[in-house]
Image (cartoon, rainbow, N blue to C red; front, side):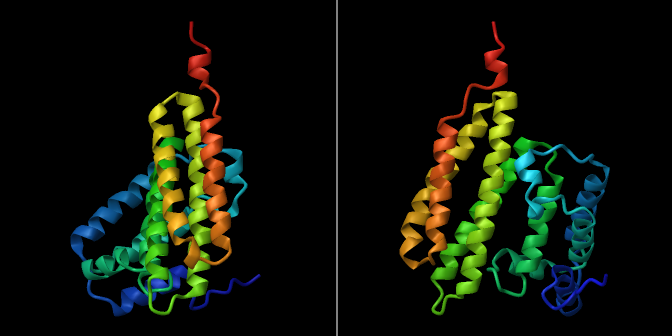
Length: 224
């Protein structure tokens, strides 16, 4: 079976940007090389069944390694543009490659859950900027909502699991603060969002209720 690698393939986009963008930034390239080596040496950790069941959430593996190597050749200007980019922009693939690399380097459920929260928060900020454009891209808005929901859902699964295992209430606090803030942001944006925005808000409300209903962690139940 042949694999179609067209213009929408992320690695192809990275190669294209690398060929047309500014020259490499030595400091950035060295940092990415160190991260790549750390990722190669770190063993893969077991993940919750609900997370493993979602194909989009698999560990990127070689794809992340390739993205890091390609991004290492990009200049500091390109990286700066990537951080300011929105879904659908040319440099957004560089931003997403960096996010995937950071997620793959998270070594525990707690660390990955916090990173998933940060990525979901980034999608929410991008969503607010997308709807503020003079001519909003409805496709980009729908894709951003879906991606935001994926990261939000995965963060909740990981942080719930980590809390029940460790008893670290800071994990519940981080998730609760995020979801309450997320509910406020989505409620304000809802009049300008497609119908899927209601589903995103419902997901956040569901996570808030599930978090409040969490049982005591095993470490506390097994105490004296």
